[in-house]
Amino acid sequence: MRTQEVIRRPLITEKSTVQREETNIIAFEVHRDANKIEVKKAVEAQFKVKVAEVRVARVHGKVRRQGRYAGRRPDWKKAWVRLVEGEKQIEFFEGM
Image (cartoon, helix red, strand yellow):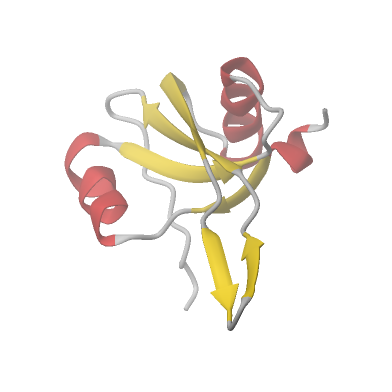
């Protein structure tokens, strides 16, 4: 898998923002087939930072209804990436 395909998007939530500021941990939505090693290589290549640790979790899609029809959101994978101490922060909204 190419490194450009691994990271789908950053997860910008209240909890992930606090984690990023206090503990240097950044959350991403990643490709479902990506493993920890691929996530680490992709973050280091795209953002030019050193990664200390990667944790991943599979998230099951929710069942959604529209009237009597039921559908399902797709399953996805979440990754928490901890940067090395003293490493620069990744700014997602720089230049805005």
